[in-house]
Length: 336
Ligand SMILES: [Zn+2]
Image 1 (cartoon, rainbow, N blue to C red):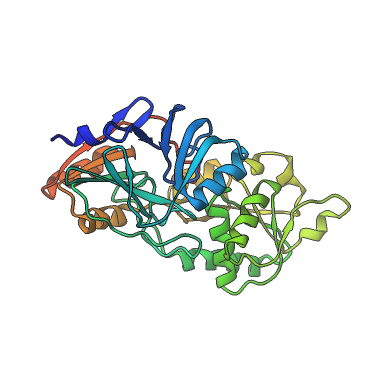
Image 2 (image 1 turned 135 degrees about the horizontal axis):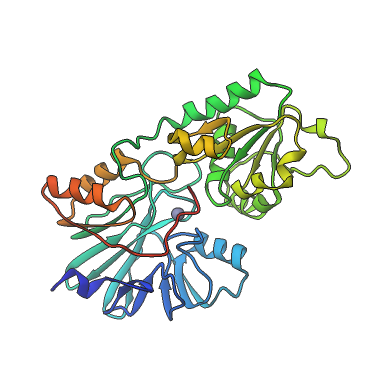
């Protein structure tokens, strides 16, 4: 049997012939298994969708209740038979509800990890290594230069800046699903208990995280109607990256522009975006996490997708594992 008999790349996404389903399809299909709620992995319009409860809820929040005709809840660790294939979902540590998908057929196992990270995140379930014959890994930060710093130290940079400039508003750009809630939760863990102001585009997802028991503290809408510019002096405001480009951002007093992303490691990117206070905070594995994970999973073969495939493929081959780039199209992680 060839691994491609169980799972193969197609223009619509990863297809499983003996189960007749797709994982994270980029085109509309009959049956989709979805790893997590980011827009490049979870798209509306498939006939049936299987995903964790959280991912299904997030899709309904973002696309409306009719994002699929039927849905099936996947519980972490529970095996379900689809066609001839045993399928199970396992935590990926990327955002709330994010999953790796394990498919097993005739004793052969492939794990599609979607997006993942290994470091502690108080807003996501911790990644669990699942042994497999073939491991499919992302490669967003798959270069040895990418080593994410300690999360707590990055949060301290933000709090220190707020202390140093008490008259300025601190405006943190963070993607709407996962990153924004993680930044807020980490700031709370660090002891900041003033109200945090959020852009309207974050309200539903922050509310959902709160409903799931993730304590984000007091959140207020960052609207100025009826107030004055000075009202936000010293405030912490979290918004989506796109909100920073429009008039919304100009209402705040002498703002310190900050952005929470793994790409903030690249100084030029921070400069291009006019970011004064870059926070290197990623929901993707860095180089050390990627190579550690491959060692933990222990596959005979690694398939590398979305990102810098070549460097990781070469690393696998040098450490004695077969590896190949998948060249799947359509995955541009909104979360970095
Ligand atoms: Zn993602």
